[in-house]
Image (tube, rainbow, N blue to C red):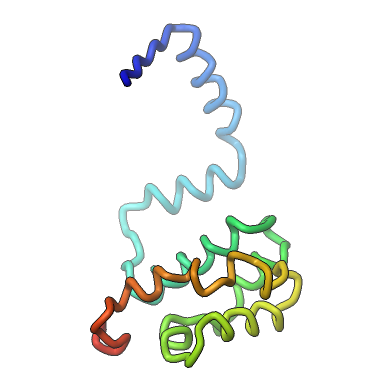
Length: 136
């Protein structure tokens, strides 16, 4: 299969108008400041893990600034840290319990977001023969 993009001047004008129309948007400005800053925060295992947890939750239900998911993601201390989940006897049970306690985040027992199967990336982070503490 071959795909050929054909972009004419009219398309370019429409894109430029869209970009210009969003230039004053607070979300756009905040993302530009953060994403285009010269100094970027270090990517640590814990930051990466929290981003992955957030991604799993925000893909399953509404996650606007004042949603249950957004409030959960902003919790400090964060209840689903990398060590907490990896040291749990049953990560799926722990995740479901934490989400149920937080309230308003779907139905943990039925949601794919809290299913141990969908949290496989946590197992991949350690590998089959490495313990979480060995990753440093």
